[in-house]
Image (cartoon, rainbow, N blue to C red; front, top):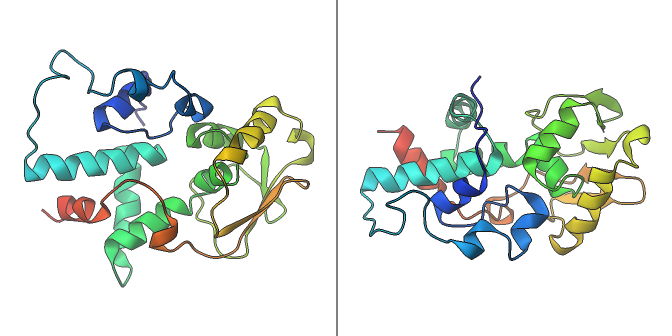
Length: 208
C-alpha cells in the first residue's frame, strides 16, 4: 500500500490549520502553520474559491490526514460506519477515535498518531494483558492498554508522557501514569471528539 513520505508540515499547510502530525513541534514557533499559514506551491498565496465538491474533499482529506489513514483504509472505515444504524458521520468519528493507535496517542504514550502506530507495530503495548501489533484494532469500553514492562523506559515514550501534560487526557479515557496504562471508560461521544472537521461534508462526498 502506498504511503506518503513527504514532509508532513505541507499537509497542515494544505489544510490551513494544525493537524498535530509532528507532536511537540506543532506546539512551538517552529510549526509550519505559524511561519507560513498559506498552502504550499507557487499558487499558495493566491485567492482561493472553493466549490461544493472542493469543500467536501478538503474535509475528507483533513480527517484522513489527522488519523493518518490511506484512502483505501479510510473508505473501509467509512463503509463500517455506513452499515451501522444511526448517524453515519458520528459513527465514522467514533470508529476513527477508537482505533488503538489513536488511543495510545490520546493517553499520552506517543507524541503523534504516526509514532503510536510505529510503537504498536514494534510490539511495545499490551491490550488486556496480551501483546498486540494491530494499530487499527477498535477498542471497546473496559479495554486496558498498557506499555510492556521492558518498554517503559523508552526515551520516546517518556518524552511523549512529559509533552502530554499540556495536552490533557480526554474524559472517555483514564490514565494510570505510574503503571503506564490506560483504561477505555466508554466509547466517546461526538462532543468529546475535539477535531476541527465537519464530518457531514465527508458523508456527502461519499454519497455523491
